[in-house]
Image 1 (cartoon, helix red, strand yellow):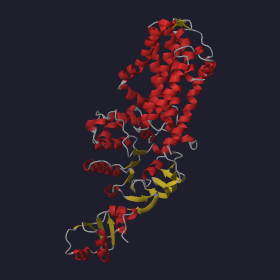
Image 2 (cartoon, each protein chain N blue to C red):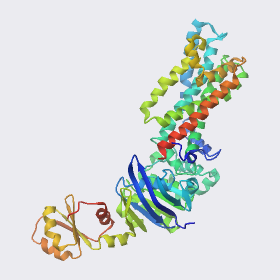
Image 3 (cartoon, each protein chain N blue to C red):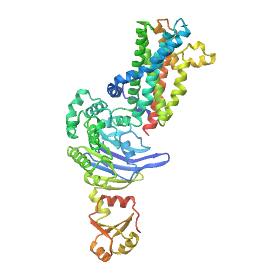
Image 4 (tube, one colour):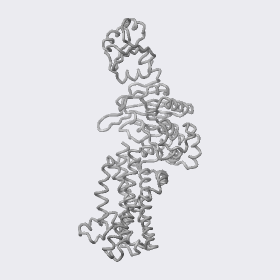
Amino acid sequence: MFEGFAGALPANAWNWIAVWRRNYLAWKKVALASILGSLADPMIYLFGLGSGLGLMLGRVEGTSYIAFLAAGMVASSAMTASTFETIYAAFARMHSQRTWEAILNTHLTLGDIVLGEVAWAATKAFLAGTAIAMVAVLLGDAEWPSVVYTLPVIALTGLAFASLAMVVAALTPDYNYLVFYQTLFLTPMVFLSGAVFPVTQLPEVLQQVASVLPLAHSIDLIRPAMLDRPAAGIPLHIGALCIYTVLPFFLSMGLFKRRLMR
Amino acid sequence: MSTAAIELREVEKSYGGKLVVDRLSLTVAPGECFGLLGPNGAGKSTLTRMLLGITPPDAGKITVLGVPVPARARLARRSIGVVPQFDNLDPEFTVRENLLVFGRFFNMSTRQIEAVIPSLLDFARLGNKAHARVADLSGGMKRRLTLARALINDPQLIVMDEPTTGLDPHARHLIWERLRFLLSRGKTIILTTHFMEEAERLCDRLCVIEEGRKIAEGRPQTLIEEQIGCDVVEIYGGNPQELSSLLKPCVQRVEVSGETLFCYAPDPEQMHAQLRGRAGLRLLQRPPNLEDVFLRLTGRELEK
């Protein structure tokens, strides 16, 4: 699998931008619908759960439930935006639309393409996560200006989940299998990572599991920033998200090479 | 340093134990139009992918435009334009945007791309379609746009996989005319086709591939002369088996394909004499063509 791997790596630090710009141009044509579409779901959860459950729950970890939930929604919407862009849109460009095939005939390498797609998915995640964080600020459920610290974390969350999803896209034979990634990995992670309730509510074993999940690391950085509280273990959380970005990225490239360049 | 545009030496490739390219060697000179002919599954597309460095060979040596492939394929691809078998234009983009986006994949600046777009649209006869969406173009227009897109980096070599498959005759002729124009400008073209007329019209030289092996190579006219060398009479109607035994003594070779009998006849008059008085037969006498060569080499039911 790794024989002649160099030919599949990114050729330089800027080739990927051409792929990113291609996707940006396509997105620009449907930008409004795309933004509204990706915001609707987390907003509904935020207001539905936040106002409904919030009334029953009172205060959670010393804040209103909706403010607690907002951080979870910022992180999980970045996760969802990044994942869906990769496993559906990028997968289509690789598979049925043959866009990658066209690009492979140019001056770009497979690595340039994957890097461009990951960067683009992270961009969409950044937009989705940032929009929700800003709504939370407007509603008084997040603190200004400490909320600004969430922005790089949202971007890093987007990169990590794009890389992870690239591995899934490289392995899946067709669309039918992609839903399993969503139902068996992403959805449980939302509940295990402290997005909708504190991790301390979980049994000890599940807390251990949660401590290695990428979404948990993301939320542990985003929630203190939104609530303007001191965060613990910042280097650990950032390091974990970086590992979740880098390792799957190279793994997916090896898998794509085996799939497309044989 | 080789002066050939493409050089393959003893190239081999197999998938899952099945040999798809079998110790194949060939050389394409600069400025030449070279055809790869073969039935479906002969290994033509695998060969084009190998030229681009996308499929690594198991053994053998490939040099494209003086550059070893796949080791330095990216450098070679800088000067190669590709027209793929399957349409992979961006349907959501306009004609102009397709060219713009593709130019960036060659590290061209927007200004550089804008500068060449008018001449490319002109070349592809799409001057009035710059702002049309690709989804709204006809099949012929899409193929011409794919050809224009392949020229964005001003390539020396153009690799085409089945360039006119699925096009109507008018669209096909327009593509051929455009390709001849490119050849007149000194471009090298390598194309795969199973469309004999295309190969005969365009190719300076061609090679016939079957099961990954080269079974003939040369100029189309030379191959026709060598392999056939006489007029062909096609006979429809009647019992081909019976007719073939009747005619065998007076023709060079007889072949049966389905309901049709092909007679390779240096002296067609003698044949006509044999058939005199038989009703219900339709005869078509014509000069030999590449299709005869292809069918002879790749196996039509041979009448022994």
